[in-house]
Length: 73
Image (cartoon, rainbow, N blue to C red):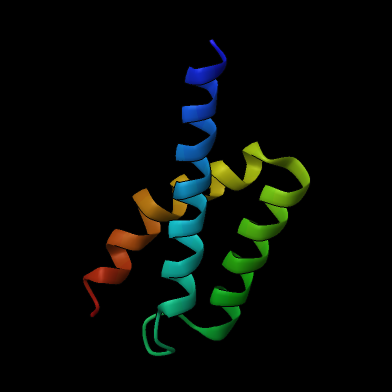
């Protein structure tokens, strides 16, 4: 059971890191600096303080927000 849990934890951290890197690399024309700061603070704080909140924020960003941003680039 612990091996499966470890796989889920690593996959969750991978999603969070992917979302953080994607937000940080967005040019200013696509994502405003305010929105970029908000997403970065939310992802990092949510992960460090609450864990699952950061994962939920990463999933929301990657599934809902990111596809909308890629249509502009």
